[in-house]
Length: 360
Image 1 (cartoon, one colour):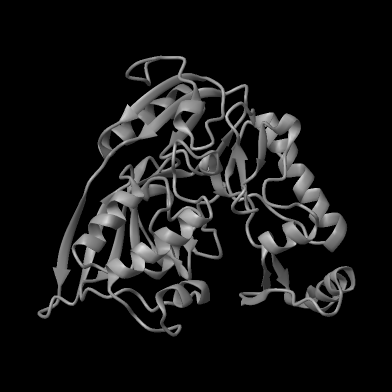
Image 2 (cartoon, rainbow, N blue to C red):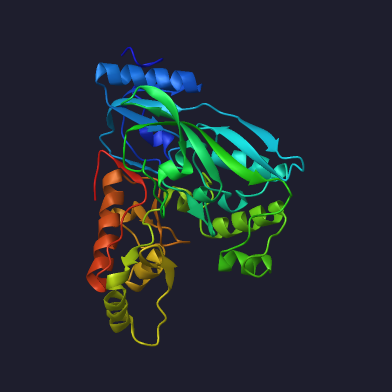
């Protein structure tokens, strides 16, 4: 095909953290933003379906693969420019294909704060704004200034600000759409050597500080990495608990009008002596998906079809490939968990990863 550099039957299992997914009709790598735009524009002109591939950490690809061209976003690097006479804050531009954790590690190494609580998250920088990636009390929306974006309909590169992206919990205006391509991301960070205020209670306890305090960025990063490793959330080829797409389900947000009824139903199911974890959220109350999954009878390590897939032995939010699984196996397990939680608690869990060629 004219849109690719090297036409190949690329098996997407080799490009996803789940190690699942069938072949692509064609595959190309874009090492620059210009090449990325060129490849996508050419595919659009030819009427070819396009799948943009970053780190493959948030993808569930069908066993049948992808009928179209896979374009791997591989532009890398970043540049830092301090602003203001005291150099206490600065702007960093990072290319979309840059490995996210390598970038975070580099910022921490320079004493630059703001992203340290997002340490250990697999994938590429360009994917982070799409679903407003977050962990341990921090979200991309906290520090993002803007993105450079190729608009496929207008056929032009433009800037989208944080306001344009309409961030919400694990979401943005770009999530679930194919309107364009993130080329680079701009963050405003702090260069005083300290982390952002620690908001997450578990992380604060690990660091031995009160919520709201700041700590040296390196200290915060190491604590976050230790917590993530304990939950199988740092990639390790030897550990099948990390053969996942991270948290498979988002924490459900119950609308304000339904909160009392839903919480009463959960309490009736688990008993009045059990505290139901709930947190304030925009438009309602956020519940813990992991808690609901466990209370619905799905323990860590719960197996799917033939034991080929399972919930992680370390964290019930991760659905994992035990080495011989298929995407169909994984989706069967996901449906079992989703339907079990719905039947017991009348709360619907929604998947966080992007499903390609398959559905729940």
